[in-house]
Length: 119
Image 1 (cartoon, helix red, strand yellow):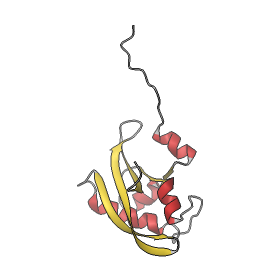
Image 2: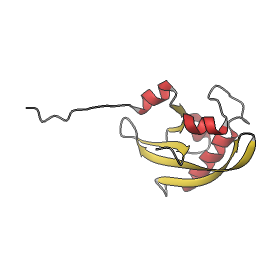
Image 3: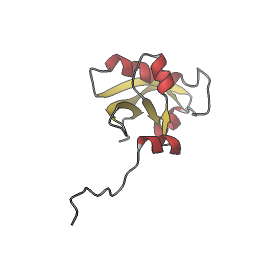
Image 4: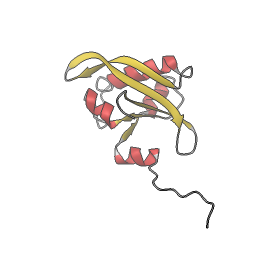
């Protein structure tokens, strides 16, 4: 009988980024002074109508707005529940976005920006 823990299932952050489940926005976050690796869920990207392939500053404005709100709260809070202005269906208005700071694949601090309804 072994005393080693058995991993039943493992799905890393890197795998999620490679699969498109998360979108790495670290360069944008760094330009805003957030010194953590930051990813955005595809659910939030889809909700606000931002495509990871688009590189227009206006296209990424909703993500920048959320990251700016996150920067104001970090590192004071581990979980930020923030209503930030996003364009959804062509209409601007607040939606519930959450930034969670947690440990990454190598136990480094990372941040994930998502809809409040996501886990």
